[in-house]
Image (cartoon, rainbow, N blue to C red; front, top):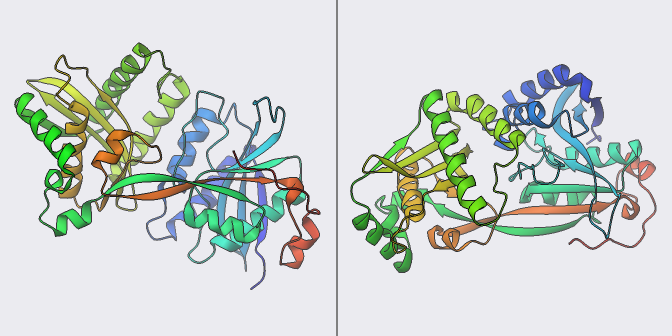
Length: 367
């Protein structure tokens, strides 16, 4: 099959890019969240003025079969200071202000991921002006598609703990009972010690944004007390998430969940729904005087139960090796980070790519 033609649109062509992107997205059954235009548009509104970017579209026989946002940044580490970097997807934000996208990739028509990946690498190689191409938080299948197009791409996989709600549903539907003995015991002890609890699942805009604002306040207070920045120190990050909530809530693709004890908030949870999976993003949890009580574990258990009862199939804690994730998960998925040095791109299989690629040199290790 012929290689797709690639169209690179500048940032100024966002209106045309959005129309093309939405048309492609509408043709894909249950498209991935972080590759949808709602996510991308929210990112552009909050980061588009500080992160150079362009839009890439793959076309075959006059039809758009793929779309990707390509952003630019400069490396800041001492070892590779000044390297010109390209990122596929919503990445490359200023340090400390990132969204930390996961299950990232290219938006592609069914069966076209490898063709889109190969066409994108060829087009970016021909355009030049970069030293490294980075894949940030990629879905494994998309990362593999890029390695087919560019075997020199070095990929590292990170585990993403998750709970299989579909399996628990089939086995009786009790989330707490499905957990290991230790976390099950701590959650049940906390439930007894915290008194009557009430869970709130936001369905209206004002309620959702109110829970989010309370979550941000709780999250930042806890992290700043520990001398850390927290996930929401940047107004751009907060703006991105507020915009995203407003865009996704009408289609029930975002979850804002709050737990009250005696009328007082003890925890808030925020996540997005991607292909019938809850992707847990962040939480805000109060500090209780009794350290044996675990409001965070309780909130997750109650939210997982609510997700199960609403028909979601999995509760994904995203990448990271935290104790609470391991305790609450029943399995794991994975996401990938990749790096391709332009100096290592060898001639690829198609004639078009052979004309575009450069001679091979030593591979730069992924770190």
